Amino acid sequence: MNKNTILNGSLILFIIFSFVLIKQNFITSTKLSDRYLTDQDLLDKSEFIVEAIVVGKSAVISYSGAEFITFNLHVKNQVEGASLENEINVLQTIVPNDPTFKLLERGNEYVLFLDEYIGPVASNAYVICGVNLGKIEVLNDTVILNSRQKESFKILRLNNRNDLMSRIKK
Image 1 (cartoon, rainbow, N blue to C red):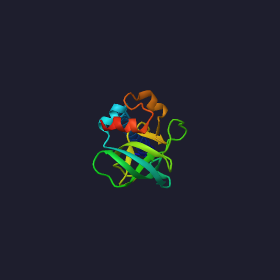
Image 2: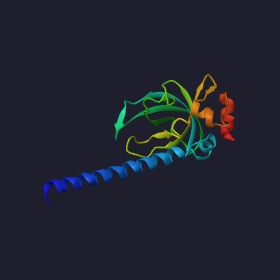
Image 3: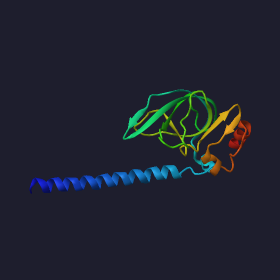
Image 4: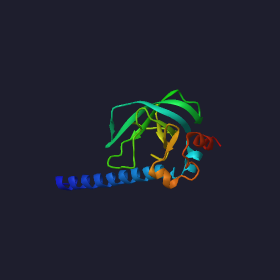
């Protein structure tokens, strides 16, 4: 065999391997995002539901071409799930150039639907279910729904924190 044959064969194997990895990652991420499409999905499938305030954040973490931030939260009230610590970490993926996606903000209060994060980016962390769907901002007892929540929420489409929390606890 000459060098060109070996080089061409290696290139073909690399392309096939890359395609398989990209396809596998696409399928995995599609399955994860499809798991939470409605507020009923959040209520039925989330491991944890908490009321929390953001008290800090990490520097940007780069991993496999994506960027993440870990936020430190103080849990004010845990509604659902196994007992959590008073301080937890929530990992968010940075989604650039998407005006509908907002990161958690320091000092803001949220009702969060969470799952435990298992992966290489962070340890002892949680992720928001349904990306932005499971993050409900609360400002002075007023519920602020994002555009995706306004489109897909039927049960939790409420304006008041007390009404929201009563509905979640049912």
